[in-house]
Length: 171
Image 1 (tube, rainbow, N blue to C red):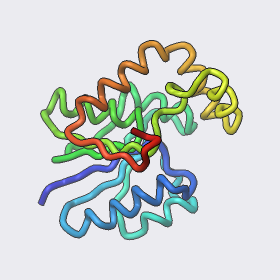
Image 2: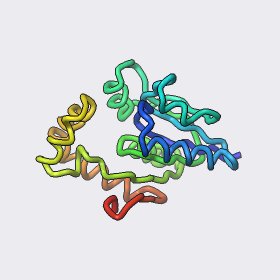
Image 3: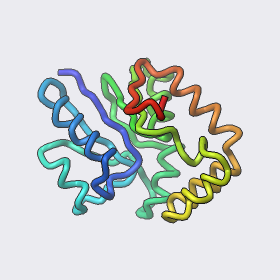
Image 4: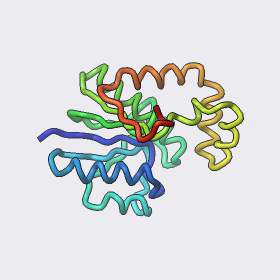
């Protein structure tokens, strides 16, 4: 049986993106071995209830703090082998690209929105970043490393085997 891994940064709140991943997992597991993998996973939170009956794991390591765990997963992910990866974020797309580069494993990207910490205007990013500590950290990473990360984002999207978008805005 083919193995598919759905990748995302964190499972903490039951938002729209998390519901999409949960629905994908439910549909795909009818025909494939399907695992949802998160850098940070709040096991007993509301969002984890979306995945009842599904397999999910964490690819983050070293830290309990959500922010550190997500950032470190960018550089040192603990990722299971699969026949296909489906990424739902910038960080996870870079992880999937490395699997393709080193192990010739295809990956798809499902773009919910562009990485806002990289692609919003400076003023919009400042407003966006005020919502949480994670966003403030992402904002500063975008300010300091955006000149490298924006081309990397375009590169991993360009090299994906398939890209799906959920709106014209995302294109």
